[in-house]
Image (cartoon, rainbow, N blue to C red):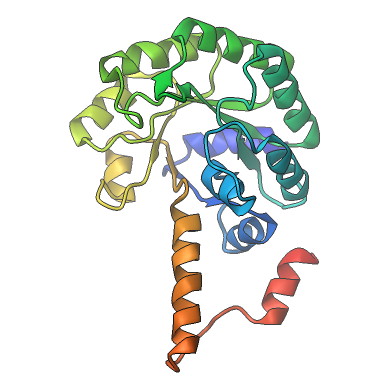
Length: 258
């Protein structure tokens, strides 16, 4: 079974796919070693780690470089490409084809734009269709930012259906938290619904009962890692004991030399 086939199957198991988002090779390798069957990237983490703002279309090369490393891992990889890092649909299709040729199993493609604003859904659907034509095995997770940006929430289902009809393999609606709305959307869609886990939102078991098939961590793990780094430095500075069971030098080395 190819990584693309395996990744697609993971959306149709007995339980939702809990998909952690990594920001560099070591974080992805550690998640794969911990037993997660697939790993995604986080645009926030990749951009911020490179000293760039998220969702500004500036991290194309950093994203490509990371993808080249991540396909060494023994699990399927899906890559967040923001809005495609370009205003030219041909450039975005070329990027998708390049990632697919590397062995990447999937991409996230969002319709959010700066302003904030949303892309014209018909144009976004045409872009999705073009990607599927040129990279047919790539799992295209079509993200609509109606809830994330708080814009035109009443168009969420209409947009999602247009993206499904264009060939999207999954629908991602970050910012969803209302249980009734999640249940309604999951039932109305013909493709797996992906939501973002929120600290004050429904739990993974709750989301499973609502029909969600994919649950992403987004930038949460990256933010948690930054917080843990600062807290460890403060702990050392203040003479307090560090938490037990931290990965050793050898543990980290083993992640990158397999």
